[in-house]
Length: 115
Length: 116
Image (cartoon, rainbow over all chains, first blue to last red; front, side, top):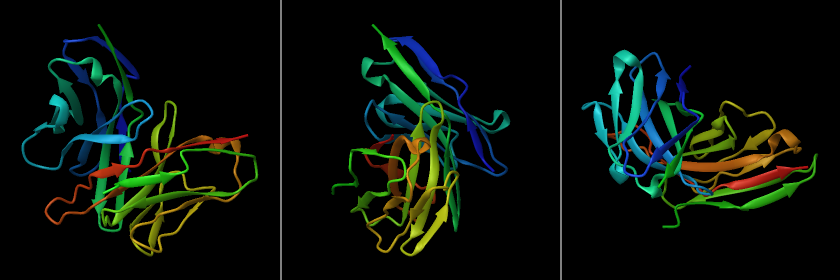
């Protein structure tokens, strides 16, 4: 079965600083990988996804993530954070064989931005 | 499009009561799912459906029932509520594009349920 680990429960960064959120996955085949963001009191919104091809994927709101098969990682990055980026971020791995479609989420990383 | 809608937004139940959380989507999505979100545990899949008339269990199905009689609706039933079911419940739907089988899920705003 697939699993996702987000080792950082809470990260605090200064506005304008760079950001990297870590995600490690476990899955026997090539995974489908996702990053979602959840603002307070809201549902989840997709930031980006990796399916195949270029291992560096660009998403919305200036985020990017890099798939590294050798490290089983899919870390999320942003060169300069804005106060509006404060939210909880979830990494997820998907299994999408017909009749077995499941998305497994990590436990999330809460991002706090300080002025 | 309204997207994914969930009702109610908030609900308080007493132990042993039953209720149905409603979920509807107007995007003609094949795939729908229910998650619960608990502090420190992320989202855990309760049940999912890959089309009308087809449902399957997720990671934490005990105490919940689902059915999918139409493409649009995917209600979640709590049979006999327990305090352990206090949580925030999210419904999601996704469209399977032929060229991109990586389902992008669209989430509803959630239902906050408290069982006393």
